[in-house]
Length: 247
Image (cartoon, rainbow, N blue to C red):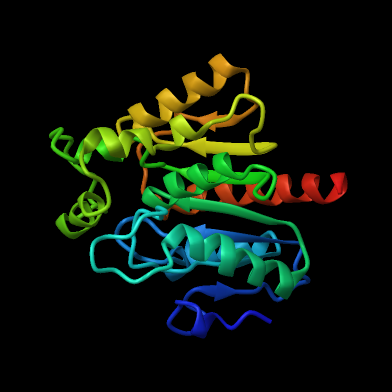
């Protein structure tokens, strides 16, 4: 089995890996938001994952934006490379079930971006409050949401020359009109800082005729609200079950 300790992750603990007491019916790689806080630290997410029989890997990364880029002086591999070359193979080998990728905020944008680039490898993707417009944090004056601190903005700026280069690398511009994740869902509450970007993503997918599901009319709420956690995890469980039937 892949040794994560030798390939960039600090240690194996329940903080970033969780298995349900019931048989595992699916697995998800759950990417953290820009604050680096694992969703597994929140009872609502842990309970929802257990309820739906999903195993989860919720790794942390030095790159809170889950890009394929390294800041000056950083040693590789990139966060994206670790997901594709280490975390996903580890999860598939350990559990032997279909694996989804998902995330909140910066992690949600990272999950979408990765799935759009390698749709065959990641046919199931979900994102809550995806930071699609994160480029606007770079010199555009967008007030960041509470979970994005100055250090997170600095990390983003260290990976892109300017806002335009960051925008060109956004999930919206990685959508392929002839190859997309078979099952994708994203949501963002009305009034949230990332809502405009999520709506722009919806319009792009609709214009290209790409099948997707989204909820952009949810009332303002915390990402760790039990209703949010159950909605996201419930959708992932259903999508993974459909994917398993299709195999």
